[in-house]
Amino acid sequence: MSEDAPAPQPRPTFETLVSRAMKLRCPRCGIGQLFTGWFTMPERCSECRFKYERASGYFLGSTYINYGLTAVSLTAIYFALHFGMGWSNRQLAAPLAVFCVLVPMLFFRHARALWLALDCHFDASVLASDD
Ligand SMILES: [Zn+2]
Image (tube, rainbow, N blue to C red; front, top):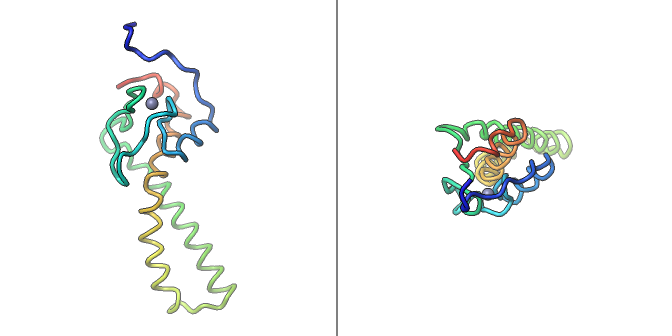
């Protein structure tokens, strides 16, 4: 092992991985930033050199998380406003259309961070690899 290699770290718990994801931090060290812009990820962690995008198209799975959150929250809001408060479909159409565009954009980074955290939880070998 060279002197530049990071020291081995204990495997983070699921709660730690989710906490780091919510803070948009590296799942391995919890220090490096996952994003340098709203939609821009660096290739590797600035602190521990952990590679974020494991393979081409790796983050496609995060769209399931993003879609799921949008669909569930949209359905809940629709039922609450339509059946609970009596808003008509005509009144709801435009605001909910805006909701369907904004929520995935706002949740984009956290969906990716959660996807990465889940991958690290279910396949801990990912955390040990620098490739
Ligand atoms: Zn890191």
